[in-house]
Length: 86
Ligand code: SF4
Image (cartoon, rainbow, N blue to C red; front, side, top):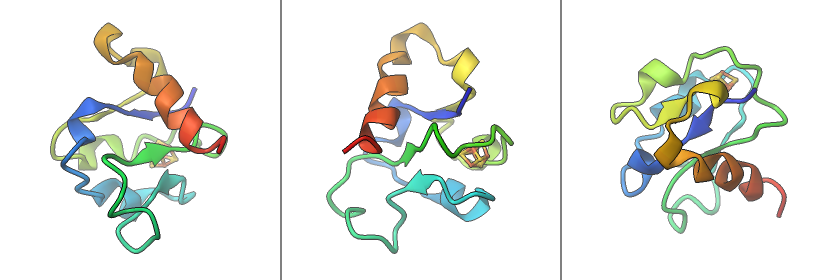
């Protein structure tokens, strides 16, 4: 089950996670189109390999393993996936 970026990323967009992801599944990064317009970053659930490298990099603890997303942030599971279904 893929990792998920949640509410704390909104307005933060630190993007340290982007640098460490071995499969480049966190977007939009600072160098990509869409970064300025997005309020948070998203993990592609179909590409994430559950390595866990991103989680400790986040300065605001916005990233959770898919099976450990707190109840109040469950909507972010779909929000992350939806970003890639456009
Ligand atoms: Fe990328 Fe690993 Fe984080 Fe998945 S868990 S988004 S593969 S760094």
